[in-house]
Length: 462
Ligand code: SAH
Ligand code: F3S
Image 1 (cartoon, rainbow, N blue to C red):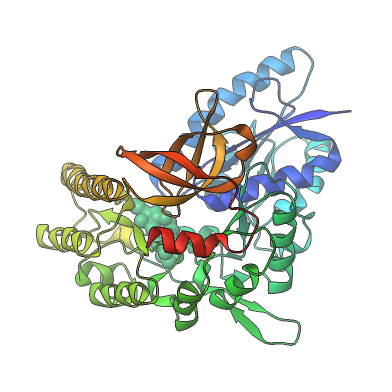
Image 2: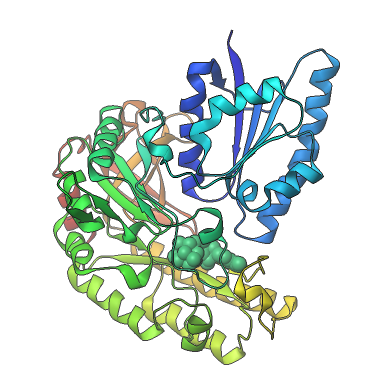
């Protein structure tokens, strides 16, 4: 009998990918995805533990779901309630204690065991808890990735992190670095392309630490993998995220120079512009080394634009340290960024450091930093007016006859265009710019499905 499954996804793109894989693995058990928790037979919260607020949200959501579960029970029906992801990994016992009505709690490395857990949950009372770091890789047990709903698809190639930045929970929740073999990744990329994906974003907590083992014992780094994926028919855009600056190697820089499908946009988190703070964060690179890296990337690909992650108010951050971050933002000219107030995470070294920065100082610095980044974003968007840019039209617009797409720089563009162009790359002439989006007119139809698309983008956006 058909059963309905609702998965709510928090946090990073890797969770988005995991959510799709959970849906794939539950489909043979009769679960079909639905868009609301009301009446669902199973609800999974795929959670994020990166900042305190992200984790707190889970407990308030669980309270709300409990009411739905109770209402179903009153009608003689059941709802399986599960918590997955990094909150489950880091605070599994706490969930069992604070929310005993939850049926299953499992971490990011064990969701291939979901069918087993569902069976267990049906048989026993009390919560099924599975937060191991198993020796087997979940990727070996999952059905082939099939869920492509859009022309842009995620593909997880690497997981985990060994860097231990002193503020970060990821190494504790996701475990050690692991790379999927190139054979497996390339096969998955092929299937995605066959199912209509034009853009593939390679994912990993530390994606450029990728070192996939070949059958003959050799290894491929990320640069080599990108070259291979670029040969797949239909793949006109490649992106990767998130990268660790100290691990950008010559091969990867060369891929930016040589592979036209690799978009001229890179998310490269730097966190701070102060060497003192970077050292306290255990980031293994200085601000100067980061600048040099950006210069080398620009030499290889002159039209490359950068975005980043920033943390303000890390323990011990002074006004001078903060000013160094602001200078770095101006000098590199980031066109976009995610920025956060430092949030102490239990069990991480930084949480125990003296000189925690007061909340109002963090708030003030964050506003200043975001103000600067917004100015830079608007300025960059304005430089796009009058240019012809390649845009992947990936969703319908708000009004009929309108489509929305993304430029190589991830800017959203609104355009009047026929529906059959959905899922294709087209050249648009940009005529206006707002803070968060552009508007353009259609110049040519269907540049897509050829490997030339990237080179068109290159000449057009240079
Ligand atoms: N692997 C990536 C990012 C991991 S988490 C990297 O190399 O940086 C995503 C972002 O969340 C981080 O880049 C950081 O800016 C932010 N973040 C992580 N832990 C945080 C914390 N304790 N407080 C505030 N921001 C944090
Ligand atoms: Fe976190 Fe640093 Fe790794 S931010 S994910 S510990 S590179």
